[in-house]
Length: 184
Image (tube, rainbow, N blue to C red):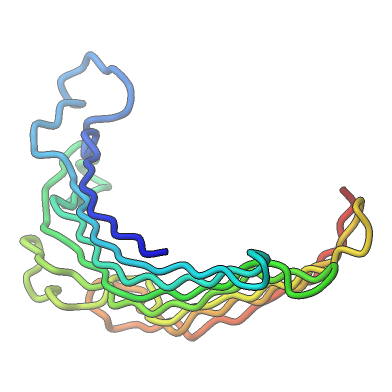
């Protein structure tokens, strides 16, 4: 199955435009809404009598009219539009039943998430977005011996990423996991 998505949506409430009705003049924000434009193409393939599915997707996302607060401490009601951010990448995943009572949910991803335009700090253009890893993945294996309980092992991985807009401070890669036993 081939899937092609082209969507555009917006967040009308940005800056001081809170998701409530306010009567004071400080809650008015008359700038353009924040938009998200998305292009995605993917393929899904089912195997083993539809018990196991594989997916691959390529995407290009752009968030524009991104808001920021020039001085959040002293002037929390002042918001500006800084520019746009872009994320392009690929995701692969597999989900389904491996064998009797054994299940898998897994995926890996690669993305380039960068500042596309920045009116506030033009030097940040083409820098990586903070707290966004280029490489990530997860693997979850579940054993379901009876209908009322299961055990599951899950591992998650994120490659190193920047903590700041200027890409000066990198956080090390993270790999963590857990084991759970659950009664249904």
